[in-house]
Length: 283
Image (cartoon, rainbow, N blue to C red; front, side):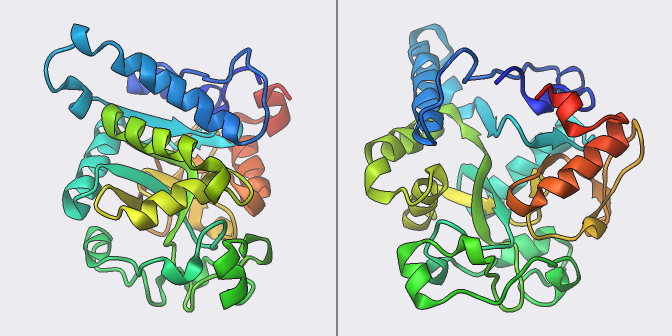
């Protein structure tokens, strides 16, 4: 619907020297599978140019996907963003990176791995599986049951790990090399009806859990921070200024107002732009 929120808050395209492509522009929305359909078609069109690109370019050229209506830029520079991705990919051995969130939704919570040691090393030794997230996790409602975990349908109850940890896949942001993304998206398209619970996240989460050598998570939110069920103390913002990640002492890159994080996102947009989310976005 219109242009993405990312294009309206701050000056992302200018600072990153890139353009945001709205894959849904002029298209009909027929449910969350539409997102995968459109992304698959776009990636196919890029791969079709293989004869016109230098050898190995598709294995190296990176693409990032963000949800259009609820993701903003916090002010980090393009160099920091790419270096963060490269560090995650190098340490994990996986080329595709998804954002992570604190609540388990649309995935088998019992199969989700613990936060890896490399992520804690990236976080300067912060205990990401211990007590670090406790003071920021305000929306947790206990933990999950084996029954809802097996159904991959626990998110409504806002279950967290004990203690809370940002270790669950969120599909509002992911990035990686074009060819690797295409393989994942084509698999997701073929298996959508088999694995979808509510939407695309359950399908992508299945792919992640089955392919940990190909997919990992942004456990520190350095690329994209998912706001749902986190307190507003995790970020600080001023009008026409960068957003500061209080938890990690850095400028935040992308910010996703997913789920119950929508009110927090509205507050950030109002502070940064001086206008409501609806006025900035145009709907």
